[in-house]
Length: 336
Image (tube, rainbow, N blue to C red; front, side):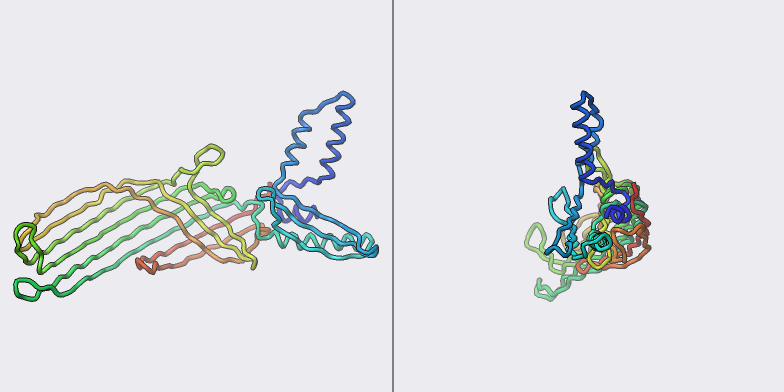
C-alpha cells in the first residue's frame, strides 16, 4: 500500500501508526531510564499532524477467507474522500498480497480526482475583448400641429487586451505579472423633434450629442488577499478533477486599479436649450478581471505532468461582447 501511495503522490510523507507507537514506547522507556529527547517528541508530534488518514483493514471471514478493505479520510473536513470497498482473498501470503495490491489500486483510482500533491508551473493567459454595438430608438412624436420623430442612436466601440503571466505555486495560489490596455468610446446622438423647452411652453427640434472616450494602460496584480498574515497576489489557478478522468482549469484574478480620464464632449443645438461644445475630463478607476474556465482535458490528479495550449472564442449573450482567450500551461506534480 505504501509504495502505491508514494508513487501516486510523491510529495506526501507517509507515516505508519505502528511506527509512531513504537517511537512513543521507545521514548517512554528512555525517559524512565532518566533520558530525555525533546526533539524526538516534537518530531513525533509533527508526524501525528496528518492531512489524510488511510486505513487498511484485514478481517477473517467464516474462517476461510480474509476481507481486505481500505478507506481514506481527510482530516480538515473529517470525512471519507475515497472508499476502495473490499475484496475477499484466500488465507495465504499470496492471496493477502494480491488483495492488498488490488485494493491499493482501487484506492489510488478513487483519489485521482483530489489534488493532494500540488501541480506547479507556468500559466499564460491572454484575453482580447471587443464590443462593437449600435442601439437605435426611433418613434413618431407630435407637436406644433405636425408629425415629428424621436431618434436616438448609441454607438459603443470598446477594446481591451490583457496578458497574464502566472506561476502556479500551490493549491490554488499563484503569483506573476499582468499588463492590459483598454480603448473605450461611446457616442450618443439624440434627435428630438418635439423637445420641451426648459423655460416657456415651446416645443421644437433639438439635437444633442455626447461622446465619451478613454484610453488607458495598466500593469500589476491586486494584492488584497492574505495568506499566513502576508499579502499575496489575487490570482488563483484551480484544477478541478472530474469523475471521468478529465479536469477543468479555472483561473481567477484582478488587476491593480489604474486611474484613467474619461473625455466627455457634449453639444446641443436646436429651437431652445442650446449648449455650446463642452469638454470635461472625469477620472475613473479601471480594474481588469480574470475569470476563465478551460477544458475539460484528459488527465488525473495522479498524473506527473499536465500541459495544454488552447484557444476559445466566447460571446456574451446580453452585451454581445466577443472574447478571444488563449491559455498555455505546463504543470508538474510536486515531488517533495
